Amino acid sequence: MYNVLNSSTKASDSPNNSLADDTAGQPVQGPLFFNYHEFAETFYIDIQSDGQFHEHDEDHCIYMTHFPNIYVPQDSQEFNTTRIVRIPRRFDTTLETLCFSTCLPGTEPAAFINPEDAQRFVARGIYDNGQLFGRSSTSPLSQYLSQYEFEQIITPINEILSQTTATFTWYNLIDLLLDILTLGVWHLISRYLVADPLLRLETYVAEVNELPLLRDNKIKIISPRRSGYLSVCYKTHSKSYD
Image (cartoon, rainbow, N blue to C red; front, side, top):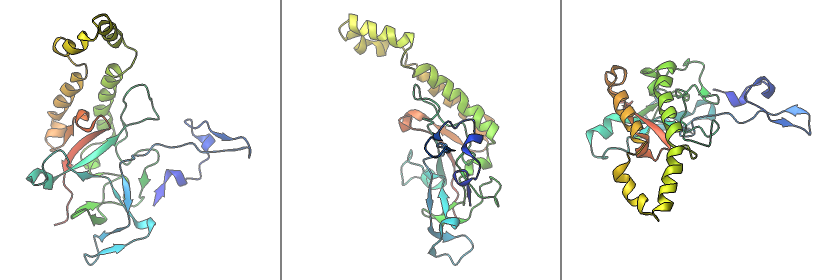
């Protein structure tokens, strides 16, 4: 198992790193971005074993890169046949507006990489009620989308959020001024007179979900509004062991 954090490359070789250890006079590698939704598991069923749970060492752990579909009832057929791949926020890019990762899961700077799998999702273990997981940060989403296609979908989301969630905009200034002048009355009636700027994002998500790339592969983006804008969720096929 290989991880960028364990690389011998010096921090000074990275254009994104500006930290240095003044005491020792040696460069110190700065933090690298990773998908904080994923986590490792060492107690699982090896796909080529006797079908029993066994403890594995850290070099042979599997990574939880897809999760239960919390957006549908647990007793529904859709819950059993779909999974959620979560795309995290990027707080290292900006704190001024909402911004999501444009890295296809498994291509982040600090992603865990299994050289044997070559950034493909390869099932290695069984966990979470028969679900299949690999030994890298690559998720099942990589079976349907390339890095370029993924970035083309997420970038417009970030552009819309940059325009609609910025603090100092004319919209916010005028809205605040009207609220002060009307002693709070504007806050009560504005929702009926002015469309929510974030509705642009809802329209975009609906349009993207109708694209053949997603529709033909039965992939769907769950609106960030439903997750409190903490992640962009992709609904994809369940990878279960039958």
